[in-house]
Image 1 (cartoon, rainbow, N blue to C red):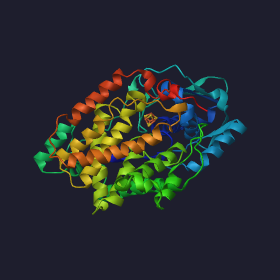
Image 2: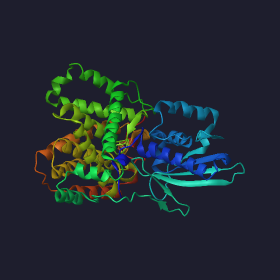
Image 3: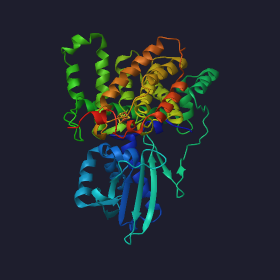
Image 4: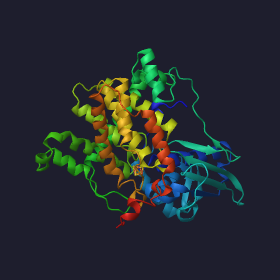
Length: 460
Ligand code: SF4
């Protein structure tokens, strides 16, 4: 399976890649399928059924809103996040939506958007079924989609089989494990970033790749900046106060806290960057999946740390960071999962931590072996991490967890760079362990909000 950097890192909106970005894409695809089948103008009624984790936590994750926006033709990359609330409220009050902005139909958010809290579809925890009927109540089209994490969507065919349209592009340096990747580096005397760059060139020119990476970084940076300046409480009912803005003010003034952490000054800034991104994510803002939305603060925080605190940081370093993180992310995606609904938070925050650790190690001059070691440390110490968001919102523990994982990634890179790359547990073994641990994990810890903090903390 060939995974491009631009598949792993996609511009979308918060709060969740699997619960917001994926469902919006699926709904938009459904409306497009109606259009290409010349059935769009016959639609008189739509039913949207959300199952498994989408049913259990979809309300808190904005899944319903995402489906409505997708049906109206919006895409995560281009939708203006600031217009969503107004559009949803219009649909609610007028009891009508416009399929692909072309064909208005009656639509009741209360009865046509159905969340099944305890039912799941067969293939994956994030299932959704969309049905369109004509005015004689005849079924025009029914499709089942699965949002499998990181904004990736797969679809069932008419026989109920999964159609995974894998990119089968032949890569010049294909690898399916980190051992194979390290062997390629050694055989061709190339870095991990160089290997990934050559692979990316099957889809784009080098100039497009470099420009695309820097553009993703600008989107991440804009998200940090917006989060650092946004005040108030986050939506959803938990009344979680945004704190990035006040932390930013504190860090620009000398406060009593500087007496406590004089030698860890950078840590406060890394915390700030991650909090800023994840508060923006929780508020439904513009986000880059990295590799998911719930874990979207870790890579920007560590990359911003590289830019602000590492001597000799430059654009080449940013590009190396992102290419290397892609190699590690593709291994998690291929050999385990990056979906919290499938393997718990270890698949989201753990994968992002490992990707960030590897990226930082690469940007600061680490060898392939040291980079592999950094990624391995970053994942190893997130093994077993459960997903139990309170109220089904991507807020508690998610926002702080990104800050913790960003610091863990920096520490992982630091430890690896102070060694020679030899170590006891390989990244491949840790990825396999993450997959096995996720398989054994009780479903209540996989983005259902039926276990852990989600049941032990009373929502107020
Ligand atoms: S606990 Fe982790 S996996 Fe679950 S929603 Fe939060 S960030 Fe995502």
